[in-house]
Image (cartoon, rainbow, N blue to C red):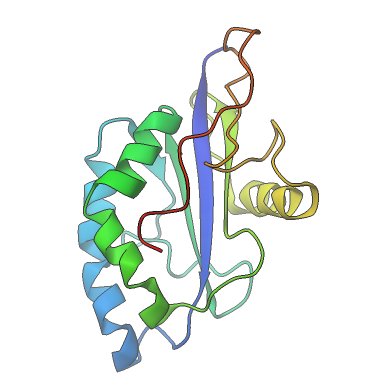
Length: 164
C-alpha cells in the first residue's frame, strides 16, 4: 500500500487574530497557503470556509493548527525550509509564543487518507510523550514509510530550522 506524509503544526498566538499585532501573519496567510497548495508534492490541507484552518481550535482558543498531507518527507521539507515559507517562519516570534514541547509532528498515512484534527492531535501527543517513533516523528529523526525497503533506518534531514 502506498503511503503519504501527514503533518500537524501548532502555534500559540500572542494576540487574537484581529489584533493589529497579528496583521503581518494574517496578511500572509493566503500567500503561504497558496504557496503550499502549488508546491511539488502537496496533496491536501485542512481548510474552513475562509480557505485556511484558523477557525479550528481543538487545543484552545489561542492555539492555531495547520494540518496537511504531502507526497513524501522531501516535498514537505522543500516547502518548509526552501521557499518563502522560511521568511514567514523567521517572523514567528512576533506573533507566537515559544513552545517547550514539540509543536509539529509527522506521520505516514495510507494514500488518499485525510486525517482529521483528532487523529493529528493524538499523533502530536504521542510524539510529545514518547519522542520520535515510526508512528509519530519529526524532521530531525524521520522514519521511512511503512512500504519502504525494510533495510532503511531512521534518517535525518538536517539540523535546526534555518529560521531560528
